[in-house]
Image (cartoon, rainbow, N blue to C red; front, side):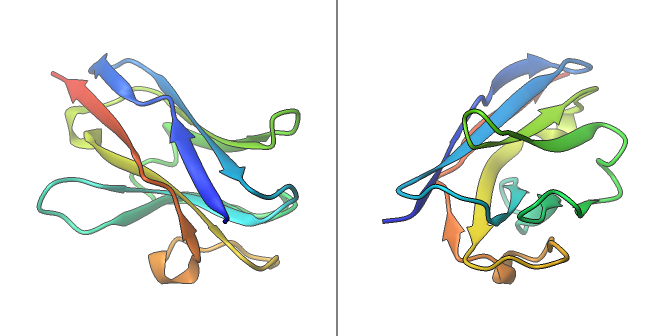
Length: 125
């Protein structure tokens, strides 16, 4: 069974940084992947994506100057480095992957086939 597994969430003060990691249990290889988040009472939103070979990345406008998506090629992990965190960044963060390799990645949740259980990020002000 293909299952993304997130880690790295936690409690951080405003202005601080966190590094989220996602590995896909059950498979090895390259896939289009993305990070999403959902705060209580709000819709899930796409934050950053990376296509399977890393040639295309995209970001939500409100995070593009603070968040960086990358891949750890040794651990086959998708990384989301978050800096200058704000209280509005408090949410459950999800990693997603899709069973295809495209030229362009996507920030829409309906484009992804596999989802992790999420890791909580809480930013205190």
